[in-house]
Amino acid sequence: MHLYGTQNTNEHGHLTIGGVDTIDLAKTYGTPLFVYDVELIRGRAKGFIDTFEKLGVKAEVAYASKAFSCIAMYQLAQEERLSLDVVSGGELFTAIKSGFPSERIHFHGNNKSYEEIVLAFDTKIGCIVVDNFYEIQLIKEISQEKQQSMKILLRVTPGVEAHTHDFITTGQADSKFGFDLNNGQADRAFKEVVNDEYIELLGLHCHIGSQIFETDGFSLAAEKLMEKIGDWYKNYEFECKVLNLGGGFGIRYTEEDQPLEPQVYVEEMIKTVQAQISKLKLTMPEIWIEPGRSLVGDAGTSLYTIGSHKNVPGIRDYIAVDGGMSDNIRPALYDAKYEAVIANKVNEEKNSTYTVAGKLCESGDKLIVDATLQQADSGDTLAIFCTGAYGYSMASNYNRVPRPAVVFVESGEHQLVIQRESYENIIQNDLPLDLKKGVKS
Image (cartoon, rainbow, N blue to C red; front, side, top):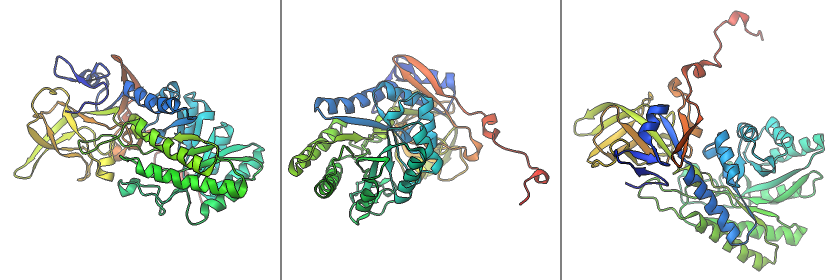
């Protein structure tokens, strides 16, 4: 069994995380339950930041909070000297409420609303990553109305395709994100903002995909962006202050995945940029990156209670858990693969094969197909590893199932950071039917 971070086994044969017995957590907080290994998150953040500092490169490591966000997570990011990447007004609002320094917040998104951009100005965030011409016009209008400046990056698509799932590849030419680097869109965007009274163009941003296990794609993207920066310096004397190479650093979900250590990605990026700086005779920009999954993905473990068991003779054994696609849509959406263990039977032999089904009313609600596990009984606690990214953040109330609780663990301590939703929470925004009192058109 592959263990992540501080995971271990105690004298009872139970899985522990952060020195805390997961069976005790399940009894205390109920299931389904997301458990985050805070020590692992801190270590990953330190790995990225320390590498830049060791190499003497000015940088910002911005947590891509779409992976998992809540007030406590933002506060942890602040403790670890991370910046923050938000992609909606809701994430920005949460970050501000958490006390996160607004000057270290970067706002992404391909369809930011007028209200969201106003919120970015009002909270005086550090940077907007501009995605399209519509957004340029909104920023111009709002900055003029408020007579307030805003720093921006232009997000570009460099035409680099990451070796990953089609649904999570964003750097190629056919993408809803960014200005195309090769068809003149990026040049046009540059001309629209470079001399604006209130807009300060810091540089360029790209993101070539997710769950990437090699450095070649990042190096090629960096080369393409540096070439464009060289052209703009030559033709317009524009000096790039920031080069943001995004995120997408892979993690291990199953034994088939072979991720690199965080510092390897960083070292290769810096090597490529420095080579281009020397070649083009430019000033070294700050390097920004945006790890999300690689900070929290394998730090998260989902705990479920096993309920029903169904045997289909000659085909498969099903065990059903008390969650499913409502708290982890990735298997249904991306065909994502996971590994698991029965947390109260860790030391027993894995001699059974089950398909782990969720409780949602969909035949495709299967969390793991053909999982090799210990003998499963109703009431056992199932732990599915590496659910820390895009599990809770993509959770839904499908079938009116309440969203799970979230717990942080570290050094033998545990803390509830998101309460479990109740049935009352589910109906709190519902209104009774009474068309006679409705609004006439």
